[in-house]
Length: 325
Image (tube, rainbow, N blue to C red):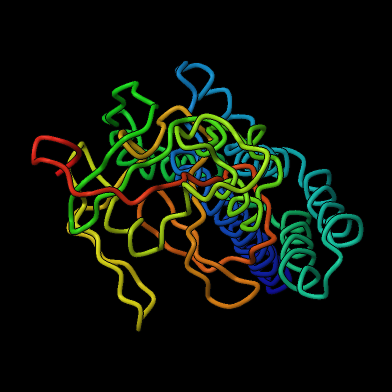
């Protein structure tokens, strides 16, 4: 009798331990998937969603921003259905990433060990009830993706695009500037600004012809990059100046309303979301500004596909009806 009771108690304890280990694996795997879902939702509408076609935007989302989260969801499902296969894949990925792609000491602690641990937990665990384990692995990341996509999707759908990509006089908030037309002084795609660096942007401005549509053979110095203060003060939201100010001491901008990638400054259907400014931090670092008003100190030699500029010229303040207020 005592032997039977001991056996039953041991069996229940073993089941509880497997259940705890299994749910720990589910929780960590779901956390990874949810973090990537959060990143995907934010970045999809921050740097993506620039095509005119809705379906092209959706395709980009699933190609570039969703796969990381989806990969953890699929791997979680596999691990629940076939624990040793899924667990082995987790461990293998944890070994290969730091070995072949991210060869840093930090990758061992932040990639290899967490993934390897999840793999072992799935190998030895068994979460019950199983149906709720599946629901957690799939449902939580999906809820995160949808939840954090609602606001940016609404904002992006309401962007103002007047279709005028020529030179614009934009006046307001103490700044009056003529902004260059689309072309060499305002590249709308990385292929038009292959160099991408701060020095190359400065050079283009010096060689830009008076009408801003071509490059001269010698420096003519009609155009320049805007200062960070001018750029912050010029940003708009729905055709109205965003009320931006730049505080040099704290190196932080502030706005009455958060600006967006809209006319007349930005081209809605362009992958460019950052512009160089002429304001330097030091000999090797300068400020860039994002369409949403963020200002960041960046190395002058950095090159990114969403990094561009728009040249400006100082003009005499125009009558009230001209420009953006």
